[in-house]
Image 1 (cartoon, rainbow, N blue to C red):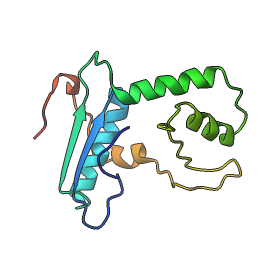
Image 2: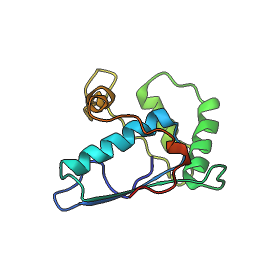
Image 3: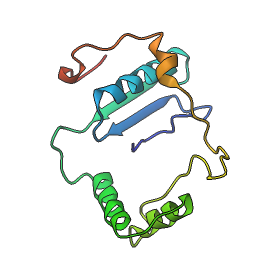
Image 4: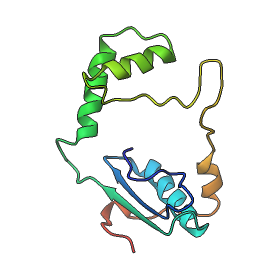
Length: 136
């Protein structure tokens, strides 16, 4: 997901703007819950969440992911290091970068949390969200 801010903000980063290509309701329901939780706890003051119009074309992350898929189909992969190398080599200018969240030896670089279980106790599903265009 491309973003114009880090989800873990610096001490003075109170505004966040996210652009999301496509997601299924099940996924972005929890993304919305998480972003609301962040504002309620003072981690952000303002969050702008923008979705691409259905049927969008020529979106650069889609193009870059397509190049990665092409390279993946023709390259044998048997380790995380292979994935990192394949990702870097998928574009001539190294536009695609791999960001590992852990290693094969189970070393954790980025801790993961069960946000669905945690946030599910605080928020109700948003009925009819696909028909909404703006939230205030």
